[in-house]
Image (cartoon, rainbow, N blue to C red; front, side, top):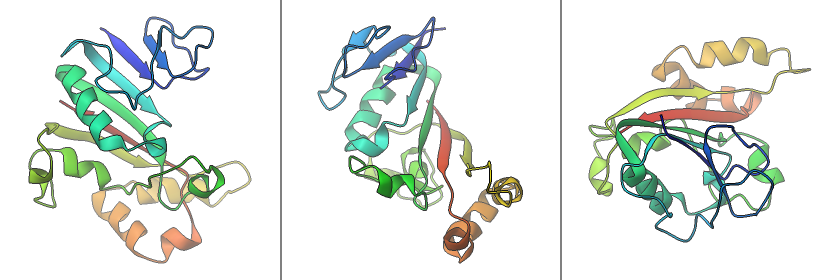
Length: 177
C-alpha cells in the first residue's frame, strides 16, 4: 500500500512518502503544493494524508490533483480546523474555513445537488467527525460524541447557538475515490 503524507512538516511517517515545502530531516520530496501538478504519476497512491495543510492554501486545485494521484478505491484523510475553531484566528496563514458539509461538494451525488461545480468527484464520504479540545474543557467530552451521532446532529450543532457556546477544534474527513 503506497501512502503520501502531504505537508508533513516534522510529522515524518515511516513507510510513507513524506512531502513538505521545507527540506527537513525525513522529508522525501521537497515541493510547494501550490506548484501543481505534484511530482507524482496518476493513480500512484492508495492513501493520502492531508493534515493541517488545506486551510493554508487555495485548496480546490490541490484536491483535484490529489484525486488524480489516488488509485481507484483509494482514500484521502483530511484534517482541518472547524469554522468555529479558535485555530482559524490564531494563525495568520489560514486562508479557508470548513464546515462538516464542505467536502460533500466534491462527492458524487452530494446532498446539495451541486457536484456539477467540479470536474472531479470522490465516490463517497466515508467519515466526517468534528473534534473538540478536551483537557480542562470537561464539557467537550460530552459534546463530541453528541455532535457526531449523525449528519443531522452535526447540522444542528453548526446551525444553532451550540456552535457558538461550544466551539469545536478540528474536523476530520475521509473521502474515497
